[in-house]
Amino acid sequence: MEPPPGTAESSKLRHVEKDILIPQIMRDRAKELCSDKVQAFTKCCQETGLLMVVKCRQENTALKDCLVGYYSDPLFYEECKTEYLKQREEYRATGIKKKRQKLTSNV
Image 1 (tube, helix red, strand yellow):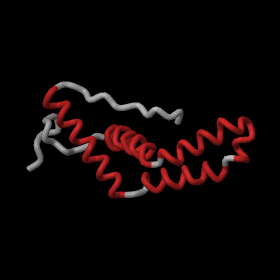
Image 2 (tube, helix red, strand yellow):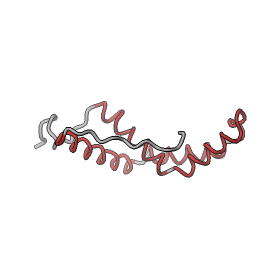
Image 3 (cartoon, rainbow, N blue to C red):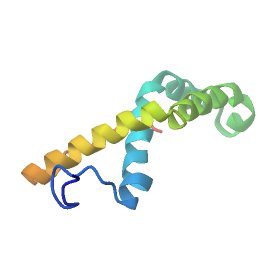
């Protein structure tokens, strides 16, 4: 039997959790996992200025392929969902919100 929705043990997800909060974790983790491609694209853009649309296609494609690979992976979604549920359970039990770490890159 599923615990009531407001309890720490409940694993039922609201729309905002499915559509916004879990995808945010996915984006953050994917950027970390694709950090080499993020850095390569950022460096290319900084070096080429206005011509970046033309000159950084290869780096942009590599970055998009890496990110989309994670975004479309159902196992990666489940990992991020589990991470979110763990954070939510901890918050509901303690009332202390875990701060999200910001990436140091410019992306």
